[in-house]
Image (cartoon, rainbow, N blue to C red):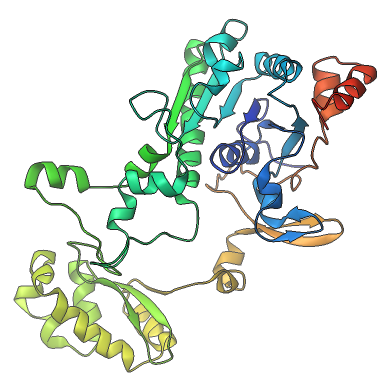
Length: 397
């Protein structure tokens, strides 16, 4: 018998497309919520993005897991009327349209609250629902720059580097899911719903650790630092004799002593000037040069074995191919296998892991409009003739 999940009984309507809003819905659905994805009759564009097999993006099977698909043309009056009916029957709304769009369609939070006062309304946008830039378009790429992440990411003196994922979207989605969880806790106490306002740039800004107080209190602007991190030594990436890199984090005082002893540099391990991080920062280049030389004389497997034996944090740089054959990833259940048209497909598990009410994948995404009859018919009470008429008029597919 399947274990219960913490969000069972919660109905979520997901409006919007691409990544930020949909991934927030994925997280909630993984932990038990009924997620009804409302998409245009042509479908969410991600259905056709990147690697496509049998007419469907492989990514989409992961992103749309556990969701029911309903098609509605929100540009049509009838489509908006039906969407409003869905929102009045929901516990949570997730939307990631430009600010003001939902209000212009009669679907804004104040409009929905008149019929559904307990609604939790999560809004994801580039710059938030207020402020002078709120109406600016804001994809992850742009907001990662505005939010401060791109400035510190890369090599000194070179163009900032983009990680090969839409980090801003995913981080915003996680913030939205967290905000919804907080709002559910509050509603259970007070009975009141609320708006969860998530901006992509603010979600990135939330990752900046000590950058703001360091600037305000000391006038220090954190700059890009390549493979190191400013003010913490040693923590870097080193090339080994087999052409592979390892990451070594030897910045704890006792760890540093063990690291340099294992590297054959007892002189540095016992140097009082290097005993604490403040001193190591001053001599960062000397320390990194010694470690780079040592790593260049050994294979990555040798370095990892030696340092793990000395209880020094160390690890490889993994590709997805490495991850999927790694015994620890497998033991931790980081991959789930679903079946697509009779063929197996591995998709990633969704975190975090809960001991008593874990999440799970029930199905790997629905076909476009697969649940129109269930949701528009059974939930909203439309007849077969009504459903046929909606399809003929292009409101649904």
